Amino acid sequence: MREIPDRKAGRTKSGIRDATMSLVTTLWSMQAAAALTLAVLYAVVWSIDRRNLANLTLCVVAVAMAVATRDEVGMMHAATATEYGEWARLIYVPIFFALIGLVLFVQLFLGTGRLWLLWTIIGTRVAVVVGNFLTYPTLSWREIGTLRHVPFLGGQVAVAGSTVLRSWHWLSLVSCALILVFVADAALRAWRRGGAEARRRALVVAVGVGLPLTITVVFAQAAGARGAALRAGACRACDRTRTAGFRAGTRAQSATQRDTAQRRGG
Image (cartoon, rainbow, N blue to C red):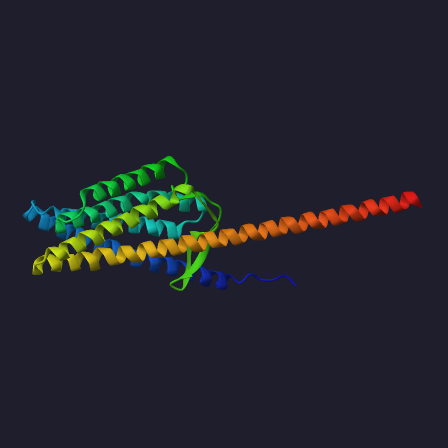
């Protein structure tokens, strides 16, 4: 008896997938809209008092985050590993402007940052973004082998499956750690300076900039360590498989040689 395809079920699954991706797009679009709204507000404030460059840096950060949100949506909607890699490459640009904007904001807002550390961070991030476009697909990934889908908001979104990391992937984490050190040091020096206004600004920077960066760096390191452990486990499994295959082949060859010797002797 010929099976009749369940077209209704197919339409239902497709509808759920489309609804999920639409929900993801809607939420990320709301984030981008909020970031652009903040960018306009900071631009207006800066236009009133152009000597206050801290507002201009926040405007740049907000625009960069809106662009990064668009790139994130593209990564989640990617259909192939190649497309995912292209979006991952593009996201380095808004991340560069967002991070540099943050450290410049801290310096302009507090005025207590160490200039040599600031220029080190800028140089490191420039190296990251330039190296990203000199390599393929990204500075961190040598290869994106597969693309898999994970449950998110009741549906499936694309994430990188098997990847091969470059030796330079730690450069991005090091630069983030330097930013964290810069922010913490600037906030601490502002706090020690004394005065209610200086301490208020130090708290604003510590909570508004330092805390999110700390969470990001810790999460990235944990994800990297987990990926390294998985890759090591996979390598050990491959080694065990190759060893077992070699031993089995050796035993089979020995048995064949014994049988041949016995037949010749008989």
